[in-house]
Image (cartoon, rainbow, N blue to C red; front, top):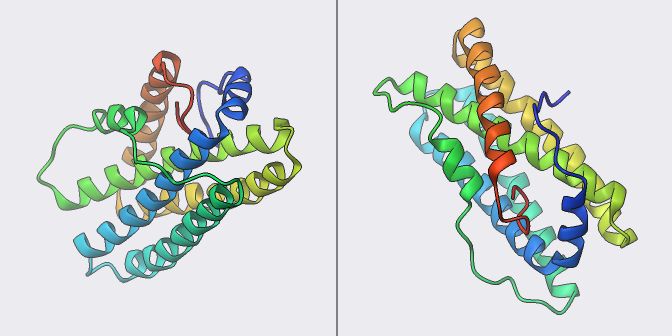
Length: 193
């Protein structure tokens, strides 16, 4: 369903479990960034009522996810920690060339968001099915379902605001580009690492 070209190495879950404090901190900031992205889209495209409506709901949901992850951090006697550079997202941003066309930029941003949500969904599924902590397994299963919905929302909106054939071609190329990023990432203690 997600269309990812390179699945996550199953050993990532073992690394994630050994460094769950770092994973939870990274995850919390991923949720915060997702809410910020939704708000940014509202600010940049206020004339697109469908987009504003969808992103308003998404921003609220992503912040509720942030709060849920933060609660897990506190329950474990940990602190949130500082945000770290997200090499995965930074590399993804290099895929699309700069453009002055507002609607082209919109479809690019929507496709990038869809891919980030798809990879998050895949990682959450791996955690939920393989982590030894039953509380975190249940927690990540619930979030996996939500991420899948976000992925489909962003794909649908990209197709709504862009040319369907062009959007699908860009999506296919972006998936190939992302597979190469995943293959070469070195930091495994991140949600997208």
